[in-house]
Length: 171
Ligand SMILES: [Fe+2]
Ligand SMILES: [Fe+2]
Image (tube, rainbow, N blue to C red; front, side, top):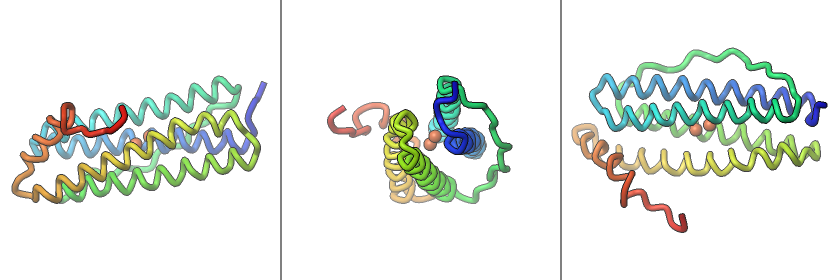
């Protein structure tokens, strides 16, 4: 039985495409850092890429649960070349902001359709986007503060982020 409308299912399929595009885009950015010999930045973005894959899979599982058809669109080419670390990180931040707008649009479509299951499902993504934007903004601020000649400080920051420098109150 199909529990969600065709329109919502179509938009969720588009979202899977966007998550997988983000997966490839982060892989491309990780590769750029890898080649620049910035292993912590590379690891950070390889992990981001894995997360985007998980997001795509979550939506696939949701379509499965609701009996909707899977129809993932083709993925646009990613950007592979960056001239600076700051450019790559600020590019990532913009991508996350755009992704958030898409999630919000999806949530408002679900609400308009009285599709409470989808609205509820999307709460995870709304929370996730907020966290991703926040941590990407922190990373960008750190990259700017360090400047292009002191990128090892950024590497240091990412290493420490796993410990005490990752300040998240109430968690
Ligand atoms: Fe995502
Ligand atoms: Fe993301």
